[in-house]
Amino acid sequence: MGRTQGARVFCKFCRHLLHCFRKFLHLFAMRRFLMKVVNRVLMMEPFTAAMGTEAQIHTRARRKLVVGLGNRGMEGTRHSVGMAILSALAARLGVADRWRGDKYVSGDVILSKIQNTHMVLLRPRLLMNVNGVSVAKAAAKYNIRPEDIFLVHDEMDKPLGKIGIKHGGSPRGHNGVRSCVDCLQTDVMPRLRVGIGRPAGKTSVERHVLSRFSSEEQKVLDSVLVQSVDLLLSHLSQPDSQSPSSPAGGRQAAPQRESEASAEAANLNSAVKTLPEGSNLNYSS
Picture 1 (cartoon, helix red, strand yellow):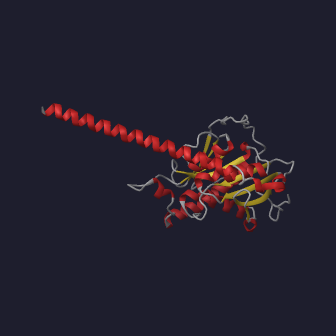
Picture 2: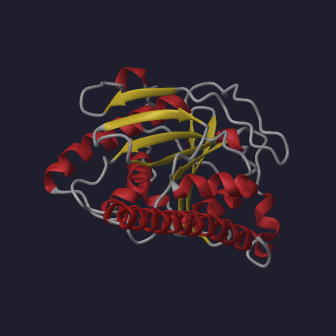
Picture 3: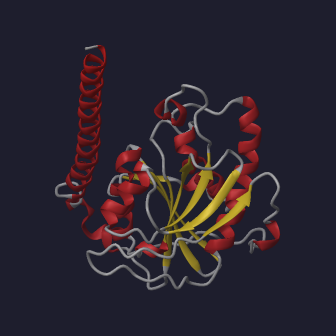
């Protein structure tokens, strides 16, 4: 009787565990589905109707869009490190005082130029999980192709102090990148992944990504900002990439090659094509 009763208890426990697992999967799927719905709703009228004639501000020259993913109002947190790097990039280019709010793209933008490449810098004003709405609107307004959109975002799979370039591919659990993939309907966008490390002990992922860097971590972050801007300038100043375009409605991913760099040890300055001091970095649309 003892063994029989024990087997029944074990079977009951397994059924309960399986039920909880199925419920978790259901909730996870529902969350993903709801975020897709929110992305679609924000992309619909009347949100984009107001763009009007200003959306036709284009130049025949090829443009690139650099986006710092993050949460509006939480710029100092790990999850918004992409915004910090974009601010550092603007400062390096001497245009940090030129941010302007653009309600049509739901973000702050700067128009600039690196050598012969026209640049649009974007900091979304939306929450991370719907950053893709802002990115897609900016891409439509400035006539920028997905393969010319450079996403800068945090990455838990890398320790603090490590950065790397990823040429398209899966969001790998990053909700901001997933939103961009959903809204642009492709995953070819190159990405600068900035390590923030995984939470220690029993700290939840949500609490970890929304926390601020410690004083010791800030010292490493200062180096990360410099090296990230160096790496961005190196890639952005290169000739137009040969990444394959995504077919209409498709999700053709670029090869998932990744170049690694240590923000503490690597010296990338020699690889950066720096601009002469006093160069005119701005242009009129």
